[in-house]
Each structure stands twice: as structure tokens, then as C-alpha cells.
Amino acid sequence: MRAGPPVIGRFGLAPAVIGVMYKREMLRYGRDRSQIFGAISRTILWLLILGFGLGAALREIEGYTYAQYILPGVITLNVLFASLQSAVAIVWDREVGLLREVMVSPAPILSVTLGKLLGGATIAVVQGSIPLLVAPFIGVTLTPLNVLMAWVVIFFMGLTLTALGVILASRLKTFEGFGAISNGVIQPLYFLSGSIFPLRGVIGGVGFLQIPEHLRDELRRLGIYTIGGGWFVELPIWIQALVYANPVSYQLDLLRYVLLGFQQLPLVADVLVTFALPFVATFVAAAAMRRMMRQR
Amino acid sequence: MTSPARGADRPVGPAIVADGLVRTYGDVRAVDGISFSVERGEFFALLGPNGAGKSTTLHMLTTLLPPSAGHARVMGFDVVREQAEVRRTLGMVFQDPALDDRLTARENLEIHAVLYGMPRAGRRDEIARSLAWASLAEVGDRRVRTFSGGMKRRLEVARALMHGPRVLFLDEPTLGLDPQGRRNLWEHIARLRQEGMTVLMTTHNLPEAEACDRVGIIDHGALVAIGAPKELVATHAPEGGDLEDVFIALTGHQLRDEAATARDLMMQFAKQGGEHTR
Image (cartoon, rainbow over all chains, first blue to last red):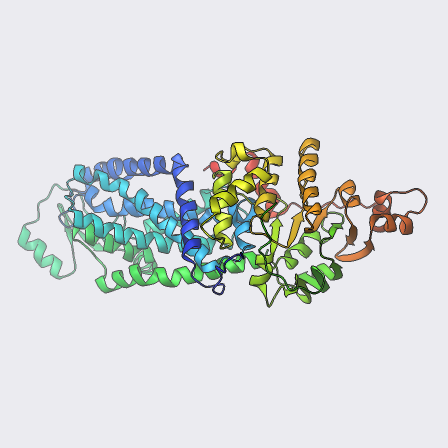
């Protein structure tokens, strides 16, 4: 009786290894109540308080209320937190946790990484589903198909963002709190993704003037989107550039399309970024994990 | 442990051979040309002050760090070219616990079983046997977070033995344990000796080193003496000295203060509540 070979090269696939690393992520998530509370509090703060608060001033965006408009954004915020928290845990894991035990084992690094990423993506789906529960209360009707498609998008978004987090964490020497990640990574990605303001900026969003429907249509043909009693103009070019450079913008845009039927970026780009990027990101993350352990 | 050894080996030659191992970090030569060998069934201790290069040597032998120069073999397998075989044939216990403390002891062992490709059938028995070996059968379903330092260490040694390794590497196994925990762990390790296990450990603890078959003293990345404890005492501290006198004679009186490493900072952070402060 000898130990069976789980090794098919360092970049091999070992389903049992993927499975056990995935199970570990899920067990850890299940035992950390604070994450669920974070998701609930973000939903309340952003979707209900900001949604209805700003929604009182901004009557509508393309026919959607402000709360409806930011629903996909709040889901994205939860996905960002879930993915990055689970990814950045490897800094900790490497110094005082299980990761060294994993790295000295013959298990292939790609499988270890995949288990981690799939776990992060699943947690993202759970965390991202919490704002979905509020959808009926803000007037978004969801069919099972909508929800299913949203889960698919959220899952792949979670995969990419967890991989991004792993790549980032592999370069962190020390970790003394999540604050830097939250302020330095999550918030820029969130604010620069078209999550809380549309790609074309708002002017005169106060709804005391009614623009006739035919005028709205005409303006739309010129690329000017009306809102309530006002209209949109383009965002400053530098913000636009940042939004276009942010992969989260495309994932979020697809999520908004799936949930509300409204989107602002080229759909082909949305689909490509959402479904092709995770595969690239996974390999880069596996290489980063390998590199991280070799440089200690 | 009663389970048969499963790790592969090549039947000839010593268990461990280090041949001119060098590891540099920029301009710093952490390990500067270390050569020694450990026979099969031998208990061998690497002794040295802080920062002498003990852990770095261990990390090269266990394939975690590629050597900058030199070669090493474990059970006949080259640590660079036959990395997978080396990993399967060794068991490793790190200086700081490498456990997931949100998981139970049983869950930690299960992960190990899968990582080493141990067959699914019999895994439960294997885990139960490891828990029994570590005297943790009663607390197998408790989270590791609630364990004392000694319990964690026994769990880690049991885990390192689970896949039937032929060589066991222990990096400062009794560091941070109280005298009871230290003695208890030492009794567990001593049992392995009777079973013929090859053990390479690093240590600060002179009585532990004295109990080994042979000792290698490392300082500034180089091996300054090697031999059985009695021989070393006879050569370097002939007038009724002990291993401590040998150690001081060879490595000097200078204190080895080190700057805080990334790990120290994290450990400090851990004491303040650690990962769970967000």
C-alpha cells in the first residue's frame, strides 16, 4: 500500500484536492458569522438608505429608480468583499496557518488554487444573493431564470476577483488588517464600475421639470440620456477611462443586463470579460501562489 | 505508529545527503555551503543560534526553497529534480503551527490525507489512529483554536506521520511549550525512534540535542562541528563540560538579536485578536 500519486505535474488537476480545499473554504465561511452580517449591513446601507435617500432626489435613471439602478452594484460590492476577504486570508494562512502544510505536500498547486477560487466564488454567490432578497421590495421582479443567470454571472465575477485577490495577497509581506484592502482595492473598483452613477453623468437630476417623452427619445439618439426633469452629460474623460479600464465595470454591466435588462457597455465586451478572464486569472493566481512560496 | 511506511525510497545510501547547499537572499548568504548526511534510522539535530540558517537548510531539504547552489537528496531522491518523490517520502512539522484553527483536528487530518493522495477507503481508521497516537481521540471534533500549544504540536506530528513518511523533519518542535508539554511531546517523538524512523530536527534546546544520535552545529550559515554529543564534548569542552559549553565555545557569547520578521509582526497582530479583527 503506497500513497497514490495525486501529482500530475505541479499544474495538474486532482479532483480530490480541489474538493478538499473547496470544502475547507466553505467550512471556514460557515463558521464566520461576521461575513454574513457584513453583507446584510451593506445591503441595508447602500440599497435601502442610499437607494431611497438619493432616490428621493434622482427620480429615475433610464426608467429605473435609483435603488433599482444600484441593485447590481450592491451585489457587486458584496462579491468584492467576499472574494477579497477569502483571497487575502492566504497572507495569514501562509505565515501562521495551513498553507505551509499544503505547500510541502505533493498536491498540485493548480488544484489547490482552484479549490480556493471555487470556494471564494461560491461564498460570493451566497453573499451576493442577500441584496437579491430585497429586490421585490424595490420593485424588481425576478424570475427563476433571472436569478439563475445572475448566479452564473456572480460566480464568474467571484472567481475572477478571488484570483485577483490571491495575486495581490501573494505580494503582501504582512497583513495587519483588512482596512488597506477595503480602502485601496475594493472601494476604487466599486466606485469606478458604474455601480452608483451611470457612465454618462447626471445634470439637473431634480425632478421638478418634466421633459416630454418625444424629446427624451430625440436626446437619446444624440447620446444624451434624460433623467427625471434633467439630462445626462458625459463623465469627465479621466473617470471614463478608469471605468473602461476596470474589469468589474463589464461584469457589473452584464449583471445589470441580466437583472434589469439595462446595460451601458458593449455586450460582447461584457461577456468576454466575465467568462474569459476567470480562466486567465486562475492560471496567473496559481503561478503567483507558487512564486510566493518559493520566495519565502 | 503501526501503519506500514508508504513513502517511496531508493534502498541504498543515507536517508539525507546535503552537498554544498547554499542559499542567498540578495547579498546575504543565509546558508553558505553546508554538507552533511544523516543515516537511516538516525536521530539528527541541527543546533545553532537564531538566524544561523537552520530553518533555511530545512526548507531546502523539504523542497520548499530551491538551493542557490549545491545538491541534496532525501531517501535517494534529488530535492530539485525529483521534488514530488521527495515530498511524498517526508513528513514535516513547521516551527509555527501550520493548522487551520477554525477546523477540527479531524478535519485538519482529512485535508492531509487528501493532499497526500491516501486512499479513500480506510481514511477514517487512519484518522482515528492518528488522533489516538497524538492522545487526542477525545477531542478530535473540537476546533483546533481551543487546543493548547502542546496539543497542536502532537496533532502536527501525528499528521506528519499519517502518510507513512520515511524521514521526519521537525523545525523547533518543542519551541513555546511548557515543561509538561515539552516532556509529553518528547515521549511521543522518542517512540518513533524505537520504530526506526529517521528524524532531522532543528533545536535550541540543548538537552534535546544531547538526546540525539548526532548533532550538527550551524553558525552564520556554515556547519562548524558535527558528531555524537559525547564526541563533541570530548573534543571542544574536554574539562567536564557539556554540550552547552561546546555550543558557546563554537558560536561565541555574542547575542543574536534579530529584526522583527513579517511573521513576528503577524504573530503580534494575532495576539491582539488577529484575523478576526476587521
